[in-house]
Structure formats: C-alpha cells, structure tokens
Image (cartoon, rainbow, N blue to C red; front, side):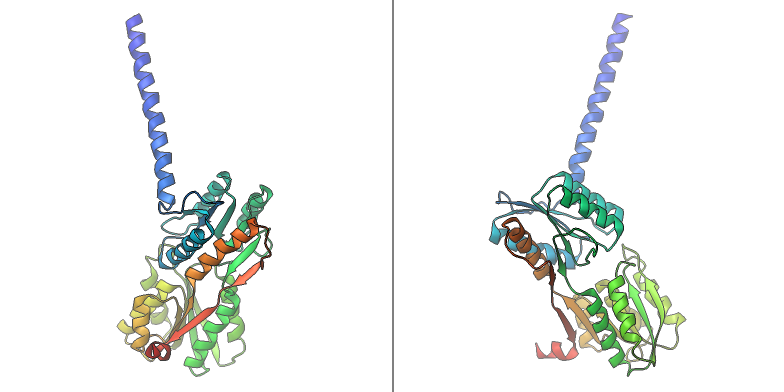
Length: 318
C-alpha cells in the first residue's frame, strides 16, 4: 500500500513539474512573439516602443526609432502584434508598464481605455509619448504624428478637384479609429454643394475583406465619381477594383501610403494621387523626444510630421 502511494506521489510530482515547464515555455514564447529581437542593448535609458501592427509603415517607424536609439545610446524594446486589436494592444502597453522602463512610446486611439492606461503609466513616473493618433484628454507627455484632421482636408480637396467639384464620393476606412481624419473630410466636402458622400465602408483589421468591401461600394453606387481610401493597403486594392470593373477614368481615387503597387497605379493613371506620412521620421522623433524628456530638456508637446502628396506629375519628375 505504501509503495502504491509513493508511485502516485511521484506521478503527481512529474505532472506538476511538466505543467510548470509548459507554463514557463508559453510565457517565454509569448514574450518572443511580441518583442522585436533586433533591438539596441545596454543604453543609458530603456524605452519601449509599442507599434500598432506588423506592416510596412510601422516597420519604417521602428527603423527610425532604432536609428535614434543608436544615436542617443538608449536601449529600445519593440512590442507588436501581426494585426491591430485594441484589447491585445492595450495588453502590450500594460506589459510595458509592468516592465518599469524609462519611457513608453505607443500608437494610441482617442479612447477612454487609452486615456486610462496613459494615466497609469504617468502616475508610475513612466513618461508616455503617443504616436499617430493623439489622446486629447490624457496625461501624455508628447504627441508625435501627422495632423489627421488636416490630412482629411487634403484628401478631400484633392479628390474634389479631380472630379470637377461635382459628384458622389465614397470613403474606405481601416476602422472607426480615424475620426479626426473623417471629420476633416466631411468638413471640406460640406464646403462644396455639388459633392456628396454617399457611402462609407470599413475593412476589418486583418484586411481580408478589403477587395470585396470596395467592390461592393462600386457596384452598389453606379453614379460614384470618386473614392477616398484612408488605408495604404485599401488604396492599392481600390486601384485593382477600378481596373477590373473597367472604371479607370470614370472613378477617381485618392488614397494614402506609398506601396509599390499604389505608385505603379499612379503612373498608369488608375489612382490620382496618395498622401504619404514620413514613418521613419515619426519613429526617430519619438525616441529623440523621449530622450529629451529624460534629460529634462525643453520639448514641444505636439510635434507634427509633414505630409507629402504624390501624383503622376511628381513621379515623372523623379
């Protein structure tokens, strides 16, 4: 009987050890999954950069941040998910706060949940810089990005000019997060009596439905004269829809981003033009500004990164 209990005890011990090891491996895996392994080490300060997602634009942001980290001799850890999900993104920021770094730089939304988590960071004496979208009522130390309201105005102006100041237009967004940009678009459109926004569509965070969403907009709005795309990938996909639906020249398209496919469509006259943000500069400025905060130097609490509009004329000049 005693031997039986000893065997049971040994088996239970092995099970507990196995479960503990599994848990440790899982935690280690999750850390590696979300952290860029190519970060600068052994610097004066340790900053954590939380990207929106893993794509071309945000990887350029990371490149700029790494360059600034090298210049200012700071350690930079980078956290990111493959696709943006607000709850997962907030979890990454929470993890960053728990690590007690010298500063956190993160993509944010103008939402209460982000305001709360920024408050948590600042209350723990961890400076916080918001990227791309500002959290207006938060305690953040600085915002670095483009003026999204002004970006919306530029997009609307370019499209309205392309359609001759008259016609129905549609808007394609990557989510409901671009409220500032949308406000700018609506504000500019309201100044033109002959232009009406007849359809606004949203693509999912993984962008798997992008082509279908834009195709449905084109098919269901036969009088559509123009489209504004507030997403780089959607801009390229909208170009494909216009070509396949035989709408080149009939539907004008103004978008965002400088994907190779988008630039190719601009050269061919499929896309009128695109608004481009300097992602590299955004990342560089973010780390530079955080360094100045730690060194108690004067900083601007709002730093706008300039926009560039690319059309066929500007590409032909290159």
